[in-house]
Length: 146
Image 1 (tube, helix red, strand yellow):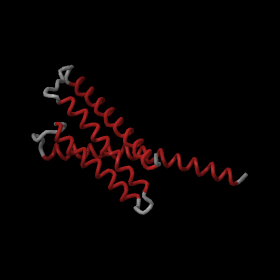
Image 2 (spheres, one colour; image 1 turned 30 degrees about the vertical axis):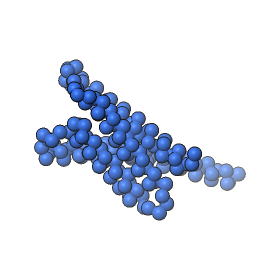
Image 3 (cartoon, one colour; image 1 turned 60 degrees about the vertical axis):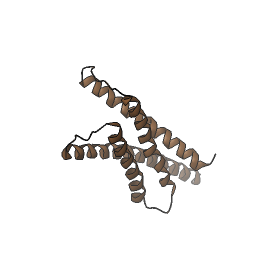
Image 4 (cartoon, one colour; image 1 turned 45 degrees about the horizontal axis):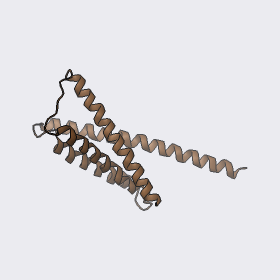
């Protein structure tokens, strides 16, 4: 299997796992804040789990753009995060995470929170990979100096 396919599968599995973890934590929060009276009907829970997996795919697949040497990093981030956030928004409305009854202000607040969470996760991964690259470069330099 090619490196690109392995990278794609790895990033997609990680993204789906993160999306389902976030979904579970938020579900627990709502269950606790509603005093254990958080209920879903009409396969709503199943739709939300599938929606979470789709969101994970929406953020995982576009990471392939980081393999391109031709695009500048800001364009890569825009493609990756733009695709993921658009898919998240479509899924969120489709499965009822935010309904049509939300005001414009609530919609903007939800969008801002969505973008903040997405960029915090992206930033953490970026720092991790930069640190890993720095460690590899340091090891290469130390091997050259021997």
